[in-house]
Image (cartoon, rainbow, N blue to C red):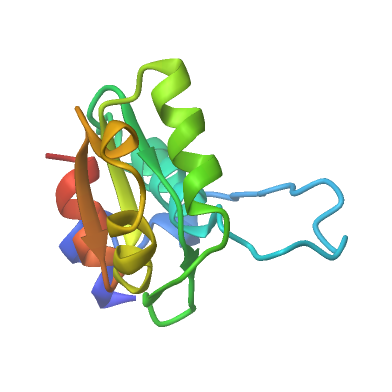
Length: 127
């Protein structure tokens, strides 16, 4: 688990702590597991005690090797972040074209970052 050190996690953390992540109806078919990067970031924040930056929204499927995979519904997700006042967004790199095709008024006033792997997410989320 030496790779955890790059994220500020004690390599022995999981030897000393029990972490249970409950995902109700997790086996229910969906369009995609787009909360992967968000769940990983929430867990890292809890484990390290580091808060994520304010007004941040993120989406992306996360593989076991840390790759960030594309999601569906970019327009709907951007509409949601605009509606609740989020100003910084992390999207999968593979969804860049989807974002670029949105009307200007939806893209306006957003700081958007595109992630290929979790390290890209981490850099934005934790500053």
